Image 1 (cartoon, rainbow, N blue to C red):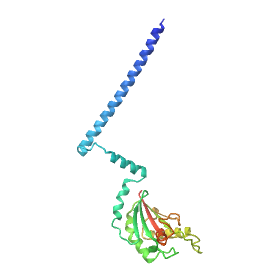
Image 2: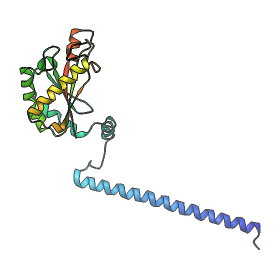
Image 3: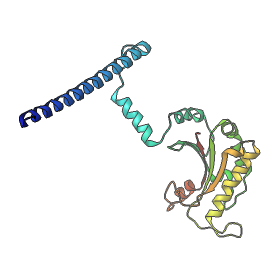
Image 4: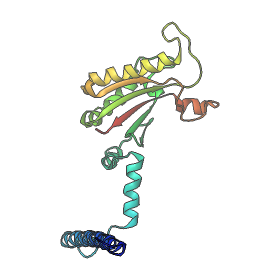
Length: 215
């Protein structure tokens, strides 16, 4: 029969064996990590020179910023396509969702109307090649200022902004821009760029935007 002393001894032996196994596993894990790091370093040296294996903290921070903002790196390749765009009243802006072509409404429509003017058709025709070669979706967005409108055709700015967006979409389809990639939406006065308290601000808010979503 085992004495209490012997029982305690067996328990300690089992515990020591368990700790030895854990120590070996941890050591093996650290060794594997070390070997993996050396492999990456040597591979980087073969392909990129002396400093190829080093990833700077700035690069990591930049990658994190891009990922957290929702931007995709390929959006950066869109901007040069529009760098030479020189159409009065048309501006280019890059945001998280893609590239925005912002067109002053006085280039496209007469006041209170949703029929494209001859000048408006010319402006859109000059954008046809860019839009036709773009592979993503294009959202045509109509915007107004805060001054109410109440006519038989347009009871409110919702109808006016939507009708203008649709008019632009229809003409783009006539220019053979794929309708499968087009959509129209009216925002009325809900997304102003500037204050509607001034004439300058209201003029800036009356616009049509072509938002190019990279697929």
